[in-house]
Amino acid sequence: MNFADFEPERKVVIAITNTDPAMVTATLHGYSTGDYVRINVPLNYGMRFPKNEILITVINVNSFWVNVNTTLLDAFVIPGAFPVNVAEVLNISGVLDNIAT
Image (cartoon, rainbow, N blue to C red; front, side, top):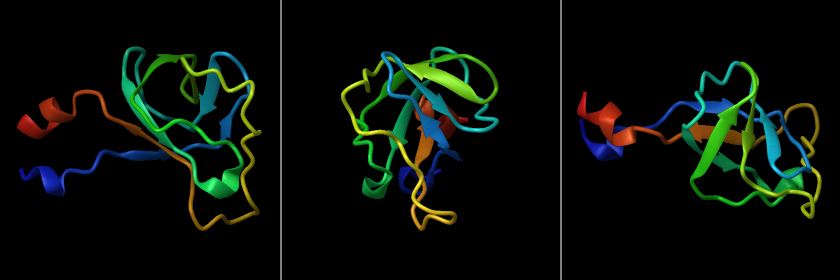
């Protein structure tokens, strides 16, 4: 498999709390505690979420904690009924292992 062809599965983010740590909600995310993710939040969602590798702690099938303090960030707000760009989370744990298999 060519690295350029690999694209991790994306899950739509429907909420991020203004807390420390922040709680992220992505319905049926399928992640495990200890996974690393990258969360992409478009500018029109208000919150300027950092784009780096983040270790998660799973709360339940729909939510997980990220060790990011969002208390001073603008609130996460989904813009309108059908946003053109969605906020998304990508599991980046084991990407090289997934490619090698």
